[in-house]
Picture 1 (cartoon, rainbow, N blue to C red):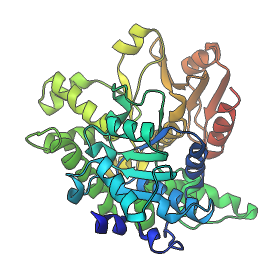
Picture 2: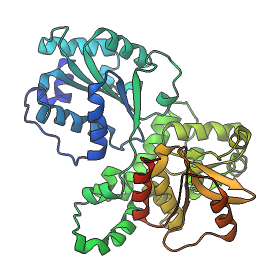
Picture 3: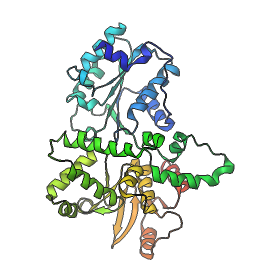
Picture 4: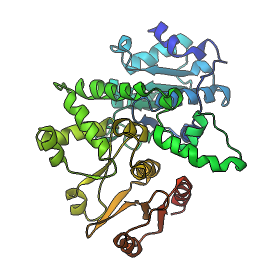
Length: 395
């Protein structure tokens, strides 16, 4: 185990070791804020969305800017098959033995893919209760968020990592525009709508990367995990979901198209949601309206959506991007008298997405005007999104 841990932690032998990665400052700042509390911080999100990179950027920050001793920081990925028979306790004990840490020494522990340990919550609770540590852990499964185990109730926080936004896309593309070049932003935003925000795909621009990513999730995280017979139905299902992104979805209709039972369709939908391959948005209204109405679906990344459908229906792609930007506001869709408004957030912001100069229909305008809300926006471009995000902090 000792050799494996040294490979995972090159800063132990070279404190000047630096990760060669582009920083995501907004997310990194979220993590830095969490250093001062004793909660376990879970990072969740789609595979290859940047959870590991963020952990290592935080480790760099701790060593280079916070002056934390490199030997007081442990990073390990628990999906390593060579460590599959080792508990979290045993890994920590080996770490302590390597550096001769006293029991009272304060340590920073980073556990990637922590859900590869079935009883990870109990193990982490015991570590937090009995040792002087700060723990960051990651998982590519949303089941972590739905866990009902009470071991860390009130003592953990989940931060979901989403794809790059437009500002981060420009940074990853090494595009720096002066005020005089602002007119070019429209062109670059079109490029962004086509490419999306999967970090490695933005850097490599290799279309095969997206296919490999989706195949990995479907086969490794769904087919293998749930012992399903075939992945072809799942692939077909996912294609249908991407084609319907931004629209209400009838699982009964999907079941008929795929020649599966409605129960199977619902179960597969849960698998997609648990692996962050799709997001579902419920209808705003009474409990009955919320539970009985069809949900709208959105892609986890607009580049993934475009890979399966082609770059078309730009307004729908833009709506998907807006959803990802406001997802933290728990949006619902508004539907009254066969008329829909795209989003109504939990802090009562009403949003209709009309890319460029499209106008609301008379029925939409009536519903928009008559709905009680703290703020109302018709979102037509990327600048409008910035206004929404700024306003959300005021509501």
